[in-house]
Image 1: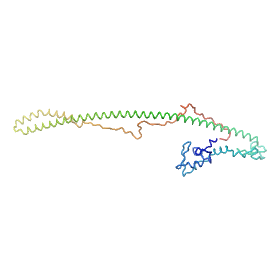
Image 2 (image 1 turned 180 degrees about the horizontal axis):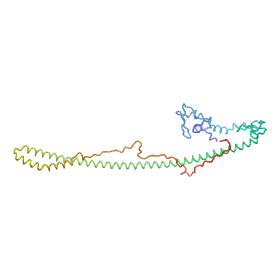
Image 3 (image 1 turned 30 degrees about the vertical axis):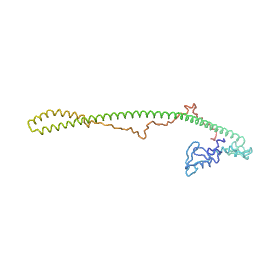
Length: 311
């Protein structure tokens, strides 16, 4: 009982114990000292309790701790003797017999020794049952707490393995990214070589076209400068006879020197959204079976058995 009545802050017996909303109790002075930024964080369950204006008004007096302290010291029972409370001669509240009576500490009614004994047995049975229920509940919660922490310990080991899996997956992704990068770079290099080759080819075509134009200019000069009309007519005829062939050549060149057939590469990076996960996602799953790997069994709630009005 001494350890149960120990303050987790000062490690001493509780003094003027206050109970936080999380139902853990501490000394009033200790709680007052632990207020930080208008809040108190329970050192046992880590629940955060707001305390506006450094007030502990939300905390309540811990009746259980007061009861246990009193029970441990025995102050409330030290004045009770075999002759207390004082006897009165009156009608028994139970059997209605007029005799010497004493007021019951439980129901505060005057009872004769026989009725008081019957009431005591009922009360004792109720107290025994209540303690039994609370012990069972405590044991069940202890089993659950142990199973929870065993399950958590197992999960921590799984999480450590999970970290290795994440790293391995990331390394695999990095490898794939590097392979994709290499492939894209090769495609660009291939296009660079292709474009470079086309530049050289088109330069040769352009030189040939310049020669072609020079030949046409020379032909035009020849028939324009010809003074002999008959010679000029023959020159015109010869040119017109060969012009279709010349046109075919130029059309063939035009098929190769054509801006409509040009293509160019564009890099479109894959840009994930901010909410997209590049590596993967961690998903919280509920309804964890904490007993699956611990070997423990889920506590079975016992049906409550009550004989009186005690809890």
